[in-house]
Amino acid sequence: MVSQLKCPACGSVLAKVRFGEPFNCSHCRERLEVPAYYARIGYLVALLLSGLLSAVVGFRGIALFFATVVLSFPLAFFLAGPLSLIVPPKIERYLPKDLRLFQR
Ligand SMILES: [Zn+2]
Image (cartoon, rainbow, N blue to C red; front, side, top):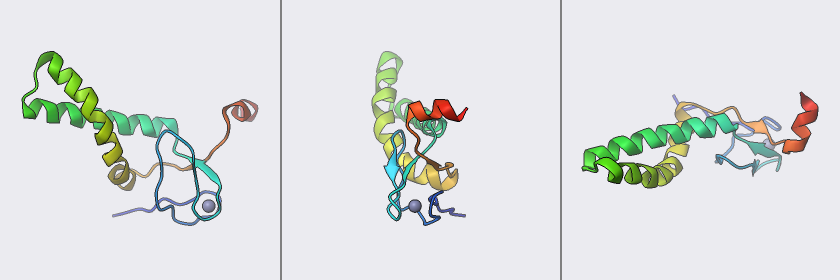
């Protein structure tokens, strides 16, 4: 069950998405973003896996802590693709922060 991420503006399938920063739709150039909460969940999953992996490899105590933090960054990067297929993020149109104030 692989769901494809679609642009909310033109409906074309997005080849890739980025977490934590806005990106352009490859088709209509609309500025899009993955909601911050989704990026946070993705990072938490990476952190959890990183901790498990570091413990399995044999890190203990403070070394385990540092290994977990360091390893979580590449893991978050590699997880972004598969995770967005398993739990598709809701792609939104990117709005500058100051504009959002007027929307509420
Ligand atoms: Zn588009």
